[in-house]
Length: 333
Image (cartoon, rainbow, N blue to C red):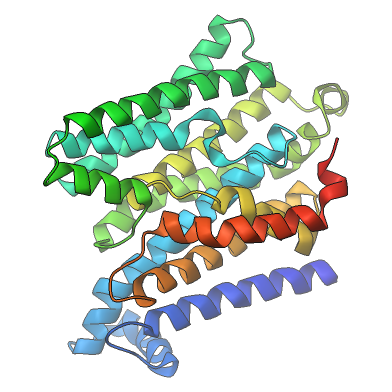
């Protein structure tokens, strides 16, 4: 009963954050007006200033924030359970750095926004593919430690490639765009951008949700999972594939945003416990609500927009220290 109440509270928090965020901005809209506009949308969008701001500017950005937060939090929960390490983040296999390299390379080549997002998405997937191939070449494809070390190496190479692109970029036009993108931002998000990444994020989240029982059993250990009839190789590949897909998709539209995948699963554990079948949906709901609130703060707290990566670090650092202090016994070996 307490679990249902927890999920109800998280769902209500997400719904409230969506409605409140839609009304905050230079053109304020009352929550009642937001709900009325959303209810009337199936019958046609009114041709007035409030509807234009709501449906063409704010809602695409809010939906992108919710998708990115849900994706990063779910990937963090999956990787932490898969690698049995509560300090793991979605970038453990280099996907964020690889996506960042793809995107900054697109900026260097002068591509349009859609092509830059596509290159970021492809860069994230390609990085993890290289990590898996390297681990297999080292005859350790099923070894968690080999996967992690390969991810560190490939991620470092991608980071060096990003630094090289920044050196080669035009310091007056391309370099500021690269720097701002790497700090994370959802400014300029259009409905077609959300439509482009939503299917990939939904597909990856669905794969993780459908396999949550097997991933939870796999977190008990290789031998225990095999004894319980779980195909560990296939389950690990599914978890890595789903987490990689959603992370690359999120990074492609939002840039590199840290701390969400590391911090939100810990917050969810305090609410619903460590069972992965409960942790995953709780992380999805909490991650979506958290990112919507952070993005709202980023675009309304100052006269200029604050990069999302800066805000998540400023919020995530102190919060994570508190979480570590509360859970220090369970985190220590």
